[in-house]
Image (tube, each protein chain N blue to C red):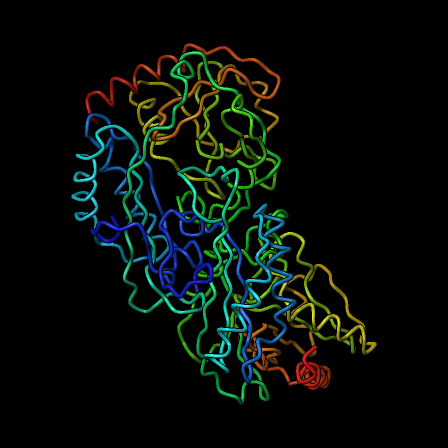
Length: 271
Length: 271
């Protein structure tokens, strides 16, 4: 759906195609329901606001999302919002007409065992650039993630972790990362780069409600080997325990297992 | 022209629209001739190579460019190459089918006096993130430039200079920058961020041929006030002398004037 109409093409002069000038979000559809749609739409609004894209089509997006989910009751919903058509040059149009694109996709065919036994993760060579103005936003400038994801082809590695230019741990190419040590949760602060995922904030919220200590802070790559448990989060995946990081093996630990249960219960209730 | 066919739309699933996964270049058309087309096509090839986009349509691009220039004998030619259609997810397709888009545009209506009396330049608040893997490439991830260009609206300011995260001077939002001091030219090294412009390399080449000392190095913002002359370069503009930087006035100095003449002669000869 392009601006509410069934279409599979966009204008060539759309600033999304010219400059990656837009934002997006991806969420699962279960039994015809787009999971946590409200949070995803709120994030689109927030991200558009930070880029100065005047987006006030949230009601349309929700209606179109529900309509699409009727036709694909299980799968993935992707929503993109760009600054819309524009002339040549970086200067944003004075009165932008944002473009919204909603699409549904089949679920990737991951082995269901990964959620129980954990995934294998590598350290990426490609690093993330720092820019406070873009940090946290799920924008459409994704060459850093593409170069990192192109580093490996083997299906035996499921995700790669990325550092920033200073060697701080930030996130996976398509996920956020949490570490457990001494019963405490920690996750990288994302004030200089990275994407602040919806699942990340849901896990942080859940931890706080359950009285689990959670710290959002600068984490150096050197701290990774000291973690007792590591897990990844992503809206379409939920929680993936990490059972291997490069050559090191990790257990699927008790706190990860508890959060998996809490998340299941929470999504069941539709919160 | 989209892949050689007259069209003004692209597939929504094109990775250019999904992730800004592509490169571009922009050049002037004078009397039906695309100026320095060979250099621009070579740069597209080089940039595609660095991103792992298998692009071997240079002959088609040249033929299509010449065809378009017949219909717009004076103006701007823009060429984009993306990784082409793809599925959801950052991982590049195993056998990408790159998309090429060529378009012509009217020249921006800049006051011709700017080339003689110089332009007014501001310092941008937005900074450039550093990433050696992307540095120098004219790729389609341009949110940093967009945010910087959105900092001012007034037509009395013609360009903004950008620093990197460490306070080093890098470039303008749409141009490269040169400083003159003691008869010597200098321009920022672009190994950590920035776009290595075709006009920048032509000026460096010309300076070397003319025996003008030229240094490519790290330049801190603090060096700007010590510059005797400053000028900007861009393929569609050529050389713009800077006559005002924030509140400071600068002369259009002798070395800038000499390079303007040398460039005119050189482009006249079509080299």
